[in-house]
Length: 132
Length: 267
Image 1 (spheres, rainbow over the protein chains, first blue to last red):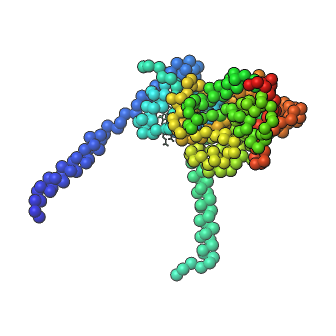
Image 2 (cartoon, rainbow over the protein chains, first blue to last red):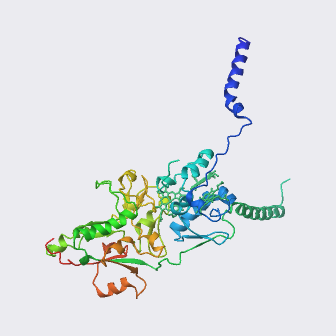
Image 3 (spheres, protein in one colour):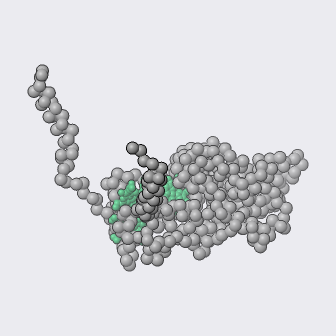
């Protein structure tokens, strides 16, 4: 084998370079960003509850929003009664974003972390963010 | 050795049962609707079997009369004012008698009508050709007769625009946002690449309010249920002679016109 040594060294360097990012990040999972729930609207709430339970929202909010838009736009139904019997007006801009008026520090933070880019905001108006 | 007929059928039956129960398990897993949640129509919502509008053209006299109605609609729905006719987006607008009622013009109609602007909007046809051609059901007819536009499903193919005989649909050739003077924060905008039009203010009806243009029209626009003989539109229709746009096409528009100059003879 010609230049066997060089090839092996080259291979080791190559494998090292390719796996470096993986090895480097091993054992330190990217920290889940801190989600801010301290908007003035939420602070005014007696009970700090979302439309449904926190676990349900975390796992299913995209599905819920999908249902909401079909109910509102296609079926003309605009009142959502949650599993505890509380009523909410079906609206992304005026209900979700009323409480979560800090889109950048709430929705966006988690979405950046999860690498999802909802396209909703090319039409729906994001809340006016207060400077922080 | 291959299996005999009886064994084959047993196996097939067994797989079918497994398949059926299997798929219901999958359905169960996919079910995301929160336990015991419900959706309702707002108690205040206005409802009808077939919404319709009568435009009493005699009530529109000054330029301001038209403007305030158009402005009421376009401002709450974030309709952009692009300012060039090629790219313009409109939900409610005006045009001449000749263009509004082609085939019904003649040399001798009163000057006040020949040169009068007529308000135009989506006719919410009973037989909407736009709905027939839409490949995604983005545009569809609701049970109350409204020809609805679901922006979420619009892919911008513009078949509906080609199908509409009334030019009631606009395409967003460019991002509309820079052309909206004051955005209404309670209603979305649209985006480049979707078609839009009047929805008879379905979002206001759902809250118990009449369409914005009707509210602003000082009685020039009458709105109600065409299928209810006691409704205001039916009363107006039985008391006045009305015409509709291009009736010969058979789309059955739900917008009716009372033709009158309203003392605008010299306009």
